[in-house]
Length: 287
Image 1: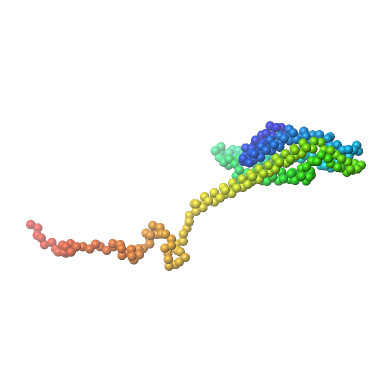
Image 2: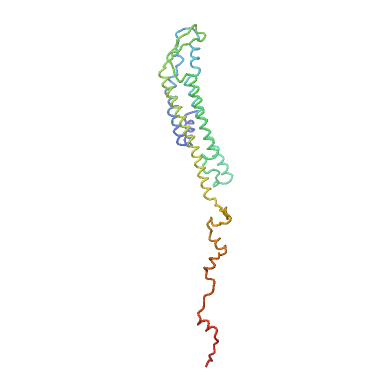
């Protein structure tokens, strides 16, 4: 893989990442890949030649070196960087799969048809892919830190080691080349790996909390549109006035006795003169 292809892949990962993911990618690329390529690889380049033992017994130095360095730091970090960056490419592959489905869907239903509003938006399956990639990256980082801690006794590199492995004739003293410089780079790479673990955990918390907040807003929005149904009668069968009545119910309900008394249903009283005038016949004779 050349640097242009690697840069294109990293650009795709950076495009579909959150803020924590972009910081994580910067830490991996600047503080781990660049340090590994520029400085660390040169420090461990001649480690076996600088591993000197105070004996000329053939094979003793090689056996002692293999005993104290079953796997080199530089090769272990190379494997760690490869395995750590691979889960991030899962997101890029998932987005590419969505783009391909979108292209086929538009070719079948027209250019205006859309299968996804945004193929790079972390919803549905892409959200799960992104979350799983974070868990995988965190597990890989922790696993490699545990391996380095288990092999090299808490990341410590002594200046002098004593070896009694066969074919050494007796217990011999072996000296590690550049022990202080290797110790500094070891602590630096371990610290960068720990920082990446913290960033992954923060990103997991951010994604999960954001998802729960979105679900809570949806549930709250649905609750506002649900009509509330009241019972027609209260628990007390002799008291039905606990709930307010609507205007339609008041119109349909017959008036009570007091309302009927207060209403002016009776005809107005006529005056006596009007009664007499109405009852007396008109005896006038027209002229």
